[in-house]
Length: 78
Image 1 (cartoon, one colour):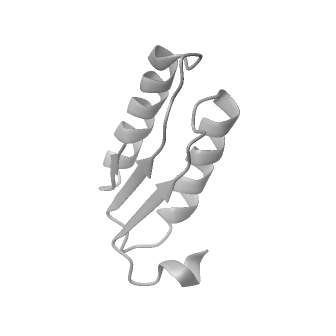
Image 2 (cartoon, helix red, strand yellow; image 1 turned 90 degrees about the vertical axis):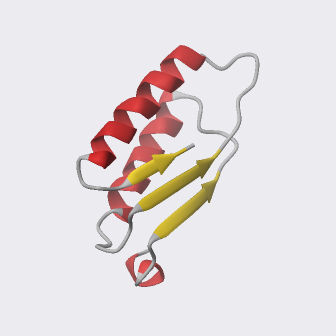
């Protein structure tokens, strides 16, 4: 993935299924990989939810990830 991010300042991910624990974990791993590129400053996630989505859980995990990324000067927008 690294060669494709050379010089990139932001990354946009479109994935309609970042809802369950394993999907969130996969997204976290993706973010860990992306931030190895020293020029990345923003990650934008485009996703969705349905009636079965545990919004409290999802919001909690995404806020944790946002804070973690901010510590290394990377902004996560959803």
